Image (cartoon, rainbow, N blue to C red; front, side, top):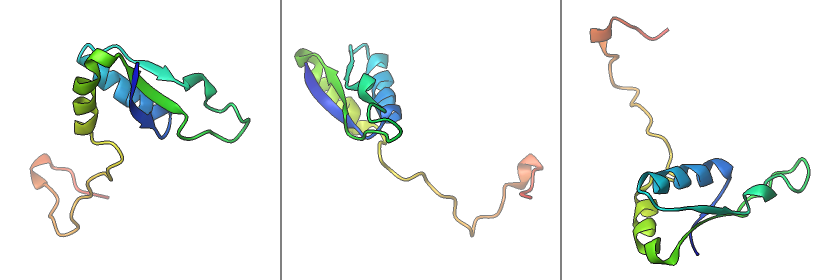
Length: 90
């Protein structure tokens, strides 16, 4: 097995896992059970998303295409609200 992604947290790991499994690539999350192992403080960078060696190149391309660690798009303040829906912001 090869590491295709080092997750910042459990949510990131599962997002990558589900994206890979949607392409029928088997996934193993190494270190998933260690999350929170230090008591109240969460551990970061301990979850590795692993795939079999033969599908690693394909999995790497899929992970590279995912919008991970990108800020969410913010609407421009200059844009007028869409009046076609009949809803106005409060």
